Image (cartoon, each protein chain N blue to C red):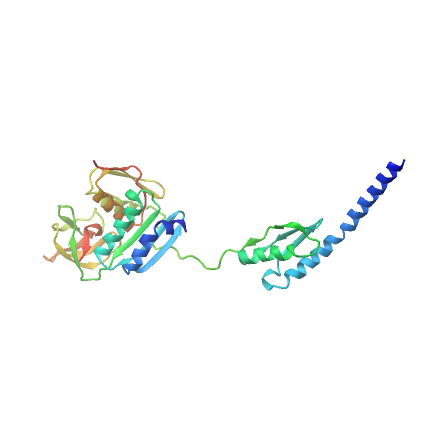
Length: 138
Length: 167
């Protein structure tokens, strides 16, 4: 219960933002929060709250497994720092690079392979797997 | 000699007092059990009486039931207070759903995901313990956020206490 109190503001915000399939459970001293945020803005807001409640997010007592709602065909913006995002033949960095998407380029979601890798298609028609961390649903 | 007589009389009285107490325990036990039987929830409580001291044991459905058993027993005539309440409360029936975000094994594929996610973030190193990714180095606030988001997406618990802010 104590952790739910610590992160009460965050949990309230998740509800206010309408996070879908919101699930909250405490296990072995870690609060697990999962669900699907409606937008990248909601997602960012929740993470900002997390870093505000737990400075540097260093306590290791929250696992915020929240993804952003994106259906097949959704437009995704490449959010690398400046470099291009590699698009690979398999969902691992061992996969052969089959294409690249530039910083700020928009690609189309083909399939959410898992939480870390998504299959995407570029405007040029290159299709492959890219690291989901660098893709923001628009 | 008179003193000896008084002492003997006193000793006799004490003996009578104690022996007359003994059979009372079973009586108390019967009375406590009868009192507890008035409520179905308390009916299965086990009662032990020793010199008027009551010990309750067994399992209760909840805390309220446990407290009620104690107060009920305490109210029975001849019971010496406090009542020893060794009742346990049964675990609630509701099972907690397994959180969707727990990963217990840091298998090779998961470790690879973390390494992939850190590939483009300079100045950090990761080592894996049995259940955590221990990340050290120096990062900007923005990259710290990225690392935490990446770990959460990969469902990996982390120790970032050694991750310092880049000046």
